[in-house]
Image 1 (cartoon, rainbow, N blue to C red):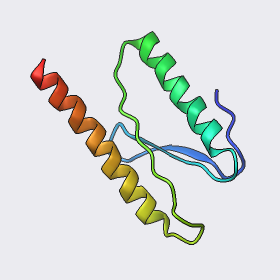
Image 2: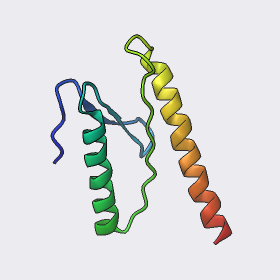
Image 3: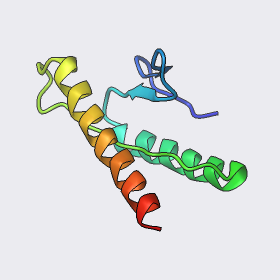
Length: 89
């Protein structure tokens, strides 16, 4: 299990296999790396492929919707590159 800081959350999106993690505070880089390491471990154990993407707020007052949109765009790009790679193989 990954220890999250106060206010951090991991949630599954509705009608999708996607998960969204919201991280706050000063330890975001370390927590994100632990999450990515856990995904890599699970990938090796389960033999499944995961697409991961992230986005960060530009300032503390930025609306979270904009951060979500950038993260969703990055995830879509990641998924599309995987589909393109698989189609070419």
